[in-house]
Amino acid sequence: MSQPAEKLSISMPRKLVSAARKRAGRRGLSAFVAQAVARELEREALGEFLDELDSTVGVVPEAELKRVRREWPKR
Image 1 (tube, rainbow, N blue to C red):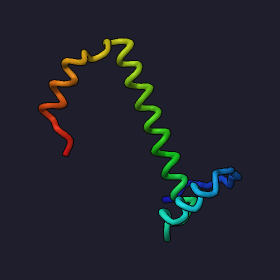
Image 2 (cartoon, helix red, strand yellow):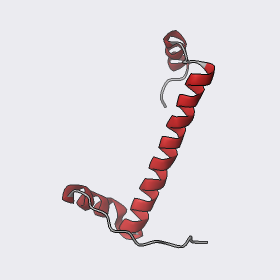
Image 3 (cartoon, rainbow, N blue to C red):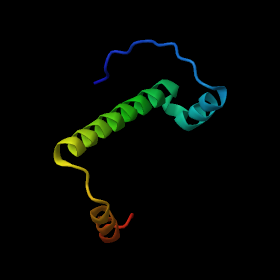
């Protein structure tokens, strides 16, 4: 089920709009922008959560990060 929509007026650099329209394709610019905003909100919320963890539990030591990165290489 689709959520109610609200019409907005935003300004973006022309090159960014052009690239977004090309990437959005058939799904349309509005859907593309809505998805991008949703992802950015999730990313910012995750960053805030990680900051909160750092302040309550402590920062993960650099040596431990290096060890984990060696054991779990990017796929």
